[in-house]
Image (cartoon, rainbow, N blue to C red; front, side, top):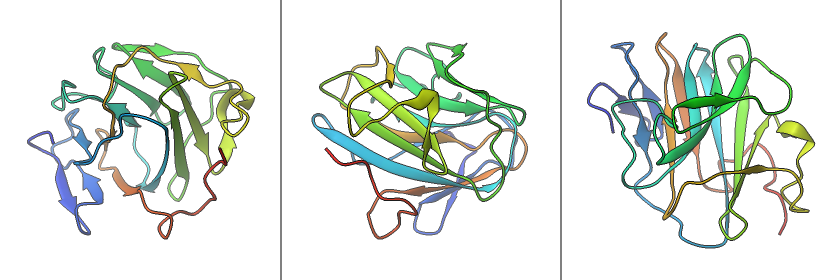
Length: 171
């Protein structure tokens, strides 16, 4: 994790009181198959990210700031996908607010990542059918990762089915 990220709630909740771009990643990774997780946005912030990284990702910056991660990024007004340090327009610009649940579905074999807000998949994608999705260039193994943002955001990672708000896509 980035030096300024503070973890709580059994290390599932991340915040960054220093208001610098710092990230945290999971300790478990996935090398094959499909993976689903959620991130509860407890406190809304500009510049929060949620996505996947590999072991070489720079955690002293935001997820997707280098070629080792891809994320859903919200700036408080809209959203995009971030990979390799660039924001990429993808579907409609939907702002994220406190209480929203960001979903991520990763299809490692297909090289695609899918993002949702409150169970609505971006860009009309359907991870269960394998349609849509963002074709990323990040190599695995993959770790879930988040950047709490620069305005006192709090993100809670949900990785187990008992924690999920929504049913993971089938397949």
